[in-house]
Length: 215
Image (cartoon, rainbow, N blue to C red):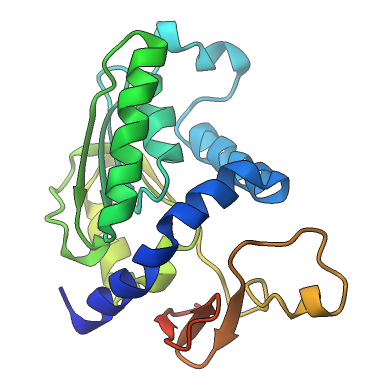
């Protein structure tokens, strides 16, 4: 790991389980997550309710890659639709959370979800050229990759011809600055405050800067 990647991992890991609870238990964040998930699935050809029937396996025989599995939403959605999914996250705790959810989803759906997940920074993964039918990285994961442009290029080359890369990153605005909470403009209380600062963001009460770039 680079020093950047190690610092990201060290700062993120204490918050992993809080994020998991917040993303699924907080209505505002849950809606945002479902919106991003729907956009991702639409980009990969899943554009109707009929196509989301798990027993139909509309993504069977297709390979997908997810950079930054987080709490597991993307890999489970893709695998549930029949895809073979490779997922990575730089933080061990997120890998554990996602692995458990994959097992639970497999039991609930009555089929083995094809998911290979490992701990690895996105910039270090050995991308195989022209292999995947789709690649995704949502929720600003690539903001926390030191040389994110190079990583996006490697992701792009790992796609088969005419296939799709879906990414979302936070830009140079104040979307992550929760000073609106102090002004009474925030409609919900996030469990983890994120404050922009030079070189990245501050999580909660931490004084350590989580490295981030805002293109």
